[in-house]
Structure formats: C-alpha cells, structure tokens
Length: 192
Image (tube, rainbow, N blue to C red; front, top):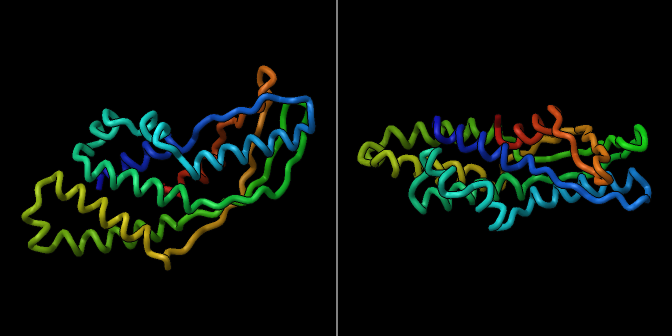
C-alpha cells in the first residue's frame, strides 16, 4: 500500500507538466485559454514518449515496481485516471497585459471513493490463501490489478471542482503558473 501511495505521488508530478504557447500579439485571454486547453489535452492523452520521460523504468524500480506486468498495470491505472478527466473553460479574465486568470471546471473520478473501494477489496483479498502464497512482487502486482478493476467500474462516481488557473506571459510565451489550487485539483484526481 505504501508503494501505491508513492506511485500516485509520482504520477501527480507527471501530471503537472509545464506547457507554453508563443504569444502572437492577439487576444491575451484567448491565448491563455489555448495554453490551458493544450495542458489538459496533453494531460488526458499522454503518449509513449511522455511515459518514458516521466515514468521511466528507473523511477518505477525506485518505487518498487520492477516486473513488466506491474509496470503495465501502473500505466493502465494512470491512463484510466487521466483519460477520465473532463474540463470546461468557464471564463477568462485579463488581469493585465502579462497575466490572465482562466476559470476551469474539472471533473475527475472520485478517487476518495475509489480508494475506499480498493481498500475493502484488497483487505478481503489479503485474507485469502492465495494472497498468503504470493511473493511481495506478486502481491504488489495483485494490488495494482485490484486498483485497476476498481477504477474501471462504470458506476464509479466523479467529482467536479472549479479552479482558477493563472497564466503568465514570460519571454513572449504564455505559461501556466504552478499554483496550489491546480495541484490540489490534480491531487484529488489521484485520491491524495
């Protein structure tokens, strides 16, 4: 369970990518919205290069995920969480020529409920004879399989948060500022 929390914390870092868009001299609110939309689209659709860069084998091994089946399950879990995120830009407000606040509704899986369901399922499994005969590596993989099953349940509810994302022009590029509200919203998507 401790390794799972480490993996989820690592995934949070993975999900706070910094993207930018070169300012074209147009409407700052539209340019800032474009950066936010780009951020969410990359977040929702990570490619193999992003996984390799942010979830390389060394990082997974350091988290106790060493076998190929577990590594694949971690990727599936991340995919399930990230692809379930929905967003809608509510509004954009120009603060000044260098700053825009973009208000976004973010809907994600209810990870608090998912983790409660996971805990119940994993405890039930851990009391079986099958669990008693598994190695630590096999038990870690089974834990990831159970989490994936819980996240794949079509009845798992979602939660919606409205967040303000600050976008700033730095060296003629619009970039999303890392802020606590954005990080907390992403963290809640991972049950943290």
